[in-house]
Image (cartoon, rainbow, N blue to C red):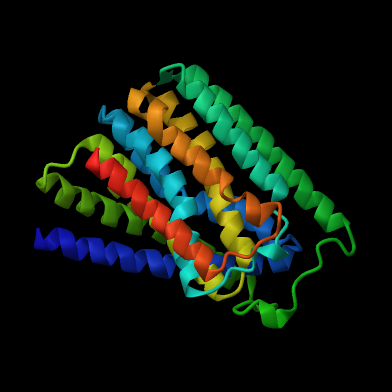
Length: 320
């Protein structure tokens, strides 16, 4: 048990260091190639921080524990909004009013609605998997088209002042940018794997069920890469990376992770998900409307409210 606790702590440390490296690499890459940090965070950062969910969901399907696979994604998406945006806002106000994330937010809501609709079939099989992956491909194509349009526009989406982008280095060599990205993308799933595997051992010692582990412990553990990345981005005043990371990661969780995992094997949907957890995930997603459409900043007060809502959600799940 002592070894499990030590390895969990090591995993958390790796997550924090890898999150910092990934943010540095991603924002410097965006500066180098002329792409907004938001678009980079919707792809490289979001996909990298979602790697643990993908690995864990595939393993859960192979081990015939669909509760962990589905609970991992649903619980992680809820945690991404309430916890991953809530805790950084307690440390520093996130100036999301400066970000234009309407289009990516609309994509996330569409992905959430599609996911819930397919869940009512009772199982995520290969048919549902292909539908989810096709939706992901369409959204990636649209993001790539936006990136090309940005490069062609001379003055579109003007970059923030250099002093507002702490940590950026316009003269950073390409090999160092690549090193940061590799360290982040490798370190995040490694740290999450150490943390989740050993934390699961601790939880099962106390007799916690697989479904509850998926919705809570595994979901929180696999959301720690997003949390680490978002905390660093918030402290660096890079709200576009922080918000884009959460939105992009949620889309990737729904479309890619369950899409790929359902091709490995069918994932049955527990009726409890249809009654409660899927709707909590949707409600949490809709809570972003004030920040996306009305350009509110995520202040410390908002951070407290989001974190409190997540604590309430955990209480309801664990009490049930």
